[in-house]
Image (cartoon, rainbow, N blue to C red):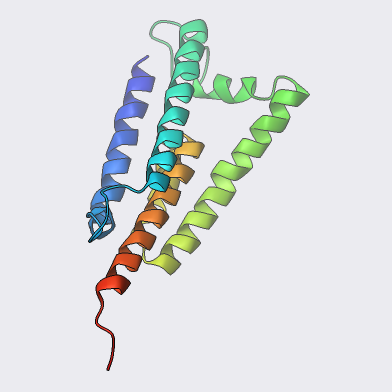
Length: 163
């Protein structure tokens, strides 16, 4: 259970790091609401994915972990968690897909796209996925993109027209 609490705390700290590294993006856009409907939708999906993930992770720890056990190997460990994702072809298909999306595509996409967009420390979205969920990391990144779009749109609306 301690490992789940540590994961949650580290996840929150990484999200705070992302927000502080991109404080200009998280400022309220001029002339608009604090959050757009699309941002809210991304955040709701992301938070729901964390809630579901922690629910199932809690169930795993509750069913498999032994008191005083090692969180890295043995009963109820990270190693056993990964191994159980490959216990049958259906689970293995989903696990390999998730692994490729989370460990390869998420960092490639957020780092390359984030640098192009001027998002600071875009690699932190991958780090966040290790402690929150892959779906949360994508939803959070998409919300940041939407917010950046709103800032650019509001800046263009107030920019003086050249004579």
